[in-house]
Amino acid sequence: MLVDIAYFSILGKPLIMYGGIASLLLLLLTAAAPKLSWKGKRLMPYRTHVRLAYVTVALVLFHGLLGLSLYFRMERFLIRCPVSVGAGFW
Image (cartoon, rainbow, N blue to C red; front, side, top):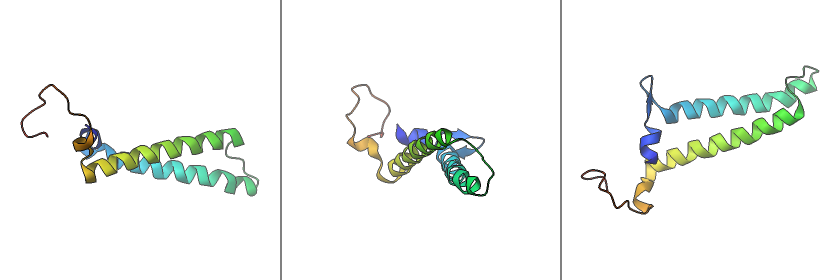
């Protein structure tokens, strides 16, 4: 199931690729906010910076979970569904 989500195709590329790009951009935006405020250019309020940091951590954890599911094939460790989902899935 997680592998299917990770390989979900958007414009011909897997979702995990877009998750990585979004994670990197959010991380750079979160890190740039305090650096710019030191120079007098206020990019966002502090509360927005903290919320953006939480969103960044959540997205990075989800991206990492999808990446690990591709490597370890985590479906083997989940409870098996009593309904047949196709030959060779398990």
